[in-house]
Amino acid sequence: MTRILFISNGHGEDRITRNLIRELLKSAPSGTEVSAWPMVGEGRSYTKTGVSIVGAKNLLPSEGLAGIQGVRSVLKDIEHGALLVVLRQIRSALNFRGCFDLVIAVGDIVVILTALLTGTPFLFVGCAKSSRFMPAYRYNFLEKRLLAQYCAMTFPRDAETSEELTRTGVVNKYVGNPMMDGLEGTGERFGTSPESPVAALLAGSREDAEDNALVLLDIVSRVYARGGMKPPPEFLFAAHDGLNVLKIRRQLMTGPLANEYSVDESPSLSRENGLVLSLRHACGGSVRFVKGHFADVLRSSILAVGMAGTANQQAMGLGLPVVVTPPRDAKTRNYLDREAQACRKGLITCSYDPESAASSVIRLLENPLLRNRMSPAGPQCMGPPGASRAIAEEILKTIAVPDSASPSKGPVAPR
Image (tube, rainbow, N blue to C red; front, side, top):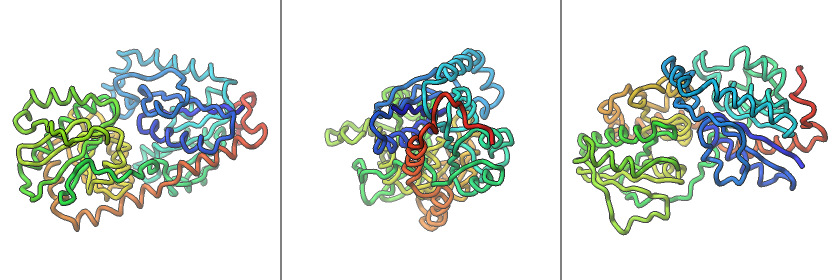
């Protein structure tokens, strides 16, 4: 029996890990046991994988982004028991010593350190940092040293990062970017008109997603009020599974946008395709909230308006120009800036100003030449799909080598 533990520390990392697990289980030998430790949040991405969920969770307000969001966010986490959370997670990692044959760490320095604490050989999927980012968001000396000495294999997100890690002695293999996997889609268009341009709305999957949804609806309302396009554009909102759509509906109907939108209760609207809420705008356009069909939302769209992290990058990777606007309190501005570094030619960054964002959306809708100029940047920097399968094959090779993943051996010996 081979026991494998996947560790991820973020919502985007959870989705990447879920795809890795699905690919691994397609070919894993009988007797392979897979567990997942979502270190941040509830780990909803794992609910349909059938794997065991283990380990202490981080349910703090920053949702794992305190270091990026700034001092206030750190202090708020401390107020909500951050030190106890860290101690619980350290205890979980230490308790896993001898329980697994191999660890797959997906994320950043946090999962690297956690994997080391388990005392188990590990592979690292580095989806958070890139040599294309500004220096503050590239791999630093400590991370390179730990990977070079203790990690059996690192899978960086792009070729440039692979070259840099190789120069510093890190054993690595670039097989593509796993962020681009699982985005094939089914062809579903959720009743949008073939004549109308469609734009995706990406609110993210963190705690502020409901607030972000209202900001995005404000932007859309300004697009309709100023656009005058015939036919009017349609918008598809990619809602994560935990988004409280009823709460958004109540806030919308009682807030400043109440006179702009009405709920479309048409019996012809099907809920079987994930459509959970349909709104009509006073100017004639529509916004449809969809759950469980993220890839279809992107593939139905010609551009995206994003307040997310991983989702923004996936949209760009599929060739969609993205209008990026920070959340209302801009607490994740640095995070969004970091995520946008690699594909800056594929996006338009706005300050928090719905009017400015609406202007950028209209500009893209009305200018196909601009969209065509921006479109190639995302696929060039994000890379093709297929990395999840390639990484799963490397995992299978690792567990096939006799005694290569014995828990009694601890981490890979320093080189």
